[in-house]
Image (cartoon, rainbow, N blue to C red):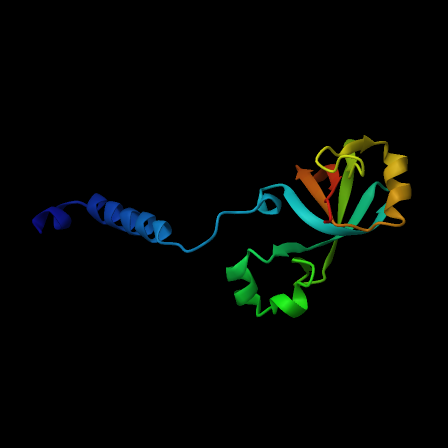
Length: 153
C-alpha cells in the first residue's frame, strides 16, 4: 500500500483504468449508418437556392428489429410500425445548413434502388418540391457536401 502513497501516478492510472472498464461495460448499441459522424437522416423542409441554404429536420429511422429502441420510446409495433418501420422525430426542430457549390445529389433509382442516380442540383430541387424525404445529409466542416434520398420500402 505504500506504493500508492509514494506516487500520484498510481491514482491517475487507477482512475484511467476505472474509466476504461466502465466504458467497456456500456450497453450502448453500435451506431447505425445515419449515426455516423457527419451523416444524418432528415426531412428537407426547404432549399433556398439563392442563399444555398438547406432547411432540414433530423429524424430517426426505426425498424421492427430495433426492439430495444422501440421499448425505450414506448412504441407499439402494431400501431406505430405498421409498415415495419417508422421515421421518429423526437424534437421537430429545424436547422439551416449551407450547401457546398460542388455538393452531390443522389436520388433513388426506381429501376435499381440499390444504385442511386446522380442528378444535377436543379433536378434535385424540382424533385424536392414533391418528395421532402427522408434524405441522408452528409456534412463536412459545417457544409452539406452530399444529399442522398433514402430508399423507402
